[in-house]
Length: 195
Image (cartoon, rainbow, N blue to C red; front, top):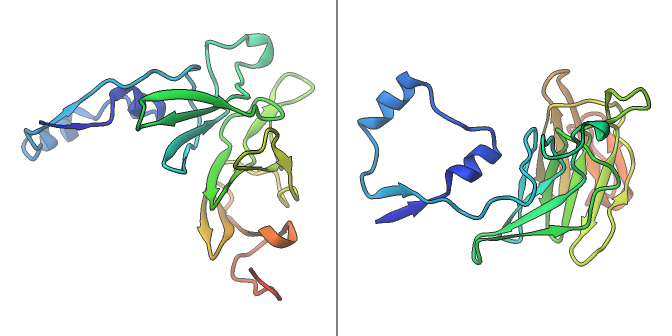
């Protein structure tokens, strides 16, 4: 019998259940040789995250958790790393501050974290302009050029070894040129000496 990822990992992504109509439709097409398997639980259960696959491992940065103190906004600063080969979680270097809704992307030997919400002085959440990086083997996150705007609801991808970002709510597109530590507001804008 084949096995597929655990419901625990689906909960991680906020996919708790399917609508009954969708479940009924799927019941007619499901492969009877597939089954669910519960995998190792996360050290800190979080939500409101955008994980990445990096070096064959699932990486989760920050998030909201009812397991964390309300006085800190329930914000996690943890970097949680799941290794499917060993079915174990480990912790990596903590973020400079807790945050949720930050976009995480893997490019080569480096993780990049874009924006998200951080704790404001008044105790509310504020959209962040942060761009952070963590190279394999590093013990600290590095701050890079800030985003031109503090936006949330990101999607990002590797485009010709650069970070291409699209902010869904405000329809903002940008390109982060890694070698120059520079953002341009439109990824169609040509750059000299592009990586």
